[in-house]
Length: 493
Image (cartoon, rainbow, N blue to C red):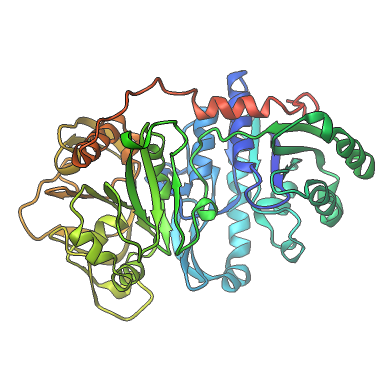
């Protein structure tokens, strides 16, 4: 092992670990350091298809490591997140090792039967990265102080040990109690891991830094661990790692409404909140489009919006049943604006889901779809995982768009046309009228598709679109500026 590993661990979930890790990756890459991201074990349904480390096709990793690889300016591979757990409901998760889906397991079964294999997989991936890079920025998961899991905490405790890592502890001040969380975390760590903590970074600070100084001094005196930086509150705009940032099932939330555009120049895209939603980051580029508001809505809410996007789902069959029972099917059939279905959302727009017992948790052979696209999806145990580039021939809600788009596919099941339909993506996908479905995740990260959809939504709503403004600084560079508030010399970086 040659590389130095910095483990970015947290006092809790959602304290800013992913942002700090991405910022460190970009900061170091900008200074000529050969840096790579790593997360031994991730739990997320926001995944990306990337090259497998062994060169054999494509595999899945969590979106945060894909983002961090981009920040580090290295091609993302499955070594960056060798163990991925994808929740599917009913206490089960799909286990993905080295990018390959293994099987669905309950938590207890995973820890009893598969954790040792997962640990070995993670350690070998780290060894490969350490042999080819100078610095590894590893991201922990949740809290490093979960004492009930310390004997099997792969992303935190075990990573610190097998990677011989220095630990940077991240604590969020926004919710209050930051000093108690720092002290409690350090007190609860195993002694050997506690000795690896080289400093603390406090995130999401608003206000006068001088008012914080007495607390910083006391926590350093009490613990002997220096506070290396206080990061101001800022959201660089990186894709969200998991569903923690989503509104709870049954509630609503709007994103993208902070651009200062007058209400009469805005449009709203409704995104029904599936119980098992996945790859919801697909709609984030729309929320960053000036004048566009993306509103997550409960399945039983009226589609009072200018357009609808159905995101992916880890379990299309069970979410289709939930959508039908909640009245979403009737809303979709009556809706008169543009509709786009992505992956599981595409499948749900069709006439029916065949071999449903392969994908769902019930025994039903066939489950009805919404019936707004004449397609049928048939499930099988095989899973498609690949990065793709396709020629877009705009039609339906993407009319007028043409050019090459890139993205990725992660899905079970294939969809067959039941009528003569437009195929917008090199023969893939389906469009009829104002409805379009595709398996292409990352569609709206492509400017030509995003702009075409925004134009279609504004035209359908009969509103004038506001003047576009120059794109803001890249989220990677904004994250790097944030971590520059940390005393990186004290970290040896």
